[in-house]
Image 1 (spheres, rainbow, N blue to C red):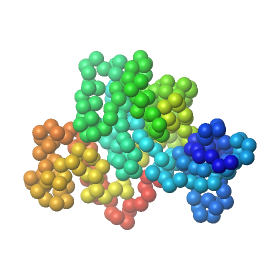
Image 2 (cartoon, rainbow, N blue to C red):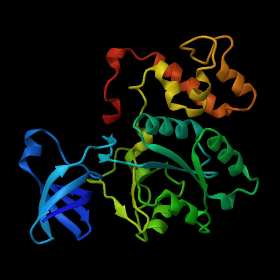
Image 3 (cartoon, rainbow, N blue to C red):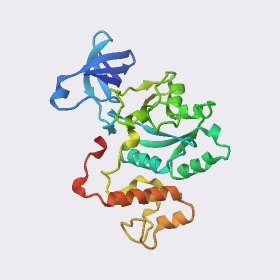
Image 4 (tube, helix red, strand yellow):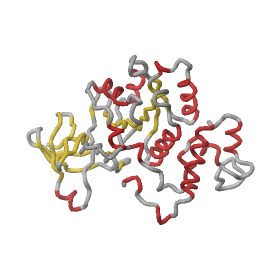
Length: 296
């Protein structure tokens, strides 16, 4: 029997495929090894099975996107989790992760957690900043269970990657969403080079699939050229065509529509600062130094 499914886990040459008939343990066909195509978690596949328990991966559908670290394909949404305090939100890091998502064709979104510790309402300002840039923003309190219904609705029918630094409440949110007790501290361990997880697993929920990406914040944007960076800032790209000079860097040129929008409040200062910081860094990288740096 041939079934359609999604690879939710891969360990030691075995691939576990979620189908309408349940999870089937599969091996990859020899043709994949010969063509050096490895099945990846997140792949939409056709499985051949006789007993609905074991089978083989027969075909892999074309991938919409792929991450190298962690090795996952067909991600619909990158949900960046930040805390409004303890730790304070790092907008530079948030913007870098959003750029990586844009570059890979993944929809970016932001979850602002710990709003129960936000008596001054700072979360509203951060929410406005990213909504103005064109991103969906969810305001939550894992401690009180606030905002999680809205967040769950966003997961419906999708594969969602959760990313964020240690201490922001990502694991607590995932535990509530999945009903599974997930380990905390994965991010801090991978930052110190002590992370020992051997595989990525998609966790099925009533809404869709979710998974943790403890190393995502370490990825870099070095394979993007400076002149291409504006394509990954939606609110900057929107004004780019209105600039006086074609190929405007939006940093030092006169009659720049982006800087005009910045001065008029149409672009957040923190977002523009992130753009300039990344642009200046990318400008120093020679073409021969570029490559698949995100897969290192």
